[in-house]
Image 1 (cartoon, rainbow, N blue to C red):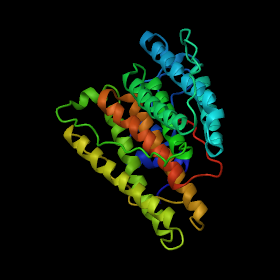
Image 2: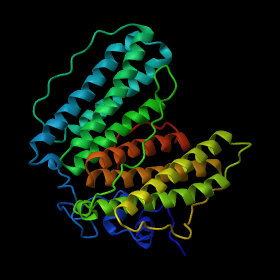
Image 3: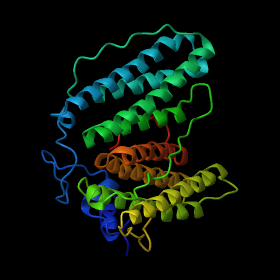
Image 4: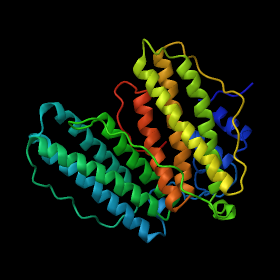
Length: 344
């Protein structure tokens, strides 16, 4: 009997059955490195160092500067939000306050890393009304792109994963707190063309295992979303039904892209399990919870891929972290959901 999909231990077992090593399975369950070690639970070398404060940038001067740049960027967003609070329409003021709290929390997370002294963010003059909303929206979107660029350039895989999570938090905020306009839902591109890339080059960074783990997550997601869709009434829950269908289409596209990418490396893609156990789906709320957990697991799988790859492949994986994080809110929002900007 297959193991339950949404249980932490059984996800490890399911990934193992799909042909993914324990290093890859860790991506499906948010398992990181063992404390005080750079080995994963399966014994494979991890791209990270220890999880102690400053550990992910230890010995990497360029990464220390990247943390400082990200800190300055997010501090600037918090300052801009505070400066405009008094000028905003009342309907948008609460959303702006939540954004300020998000950025303060993100800065606090980055402050645990070793950084040089950062330049205090200046408080800009606040334009009035709708102009301030437009400027804030542009600043948030620009910061999300900048964080993805920093993640792509990071020397440390753990720092890349952290920055990708922070960028995903801004994407979540654009959906939960759209600041006077429609929600902005990201859309990722296809997997970069890996034709001509030696599999051995990716294996040196656990890249092939991570690609297989991401593919395993997509197989699972497609199967489970079909069951969630079957448990959802198109007549009484049309919004939820359409969100499930859209999520399923995105997972199928990524599955196909990942299979093509692996074949271009002369690697056989892992297949799907025959079936996956599910929790009870007797109510719409339980369907939403299952969908939310599924998308969170997908984000973790791509967070692992972000950590162990480089260049355009890392940039794509970091973008999928944002996509999955946003989908978890669109498809199954919890009461009082707030953007976190952090992977587990």
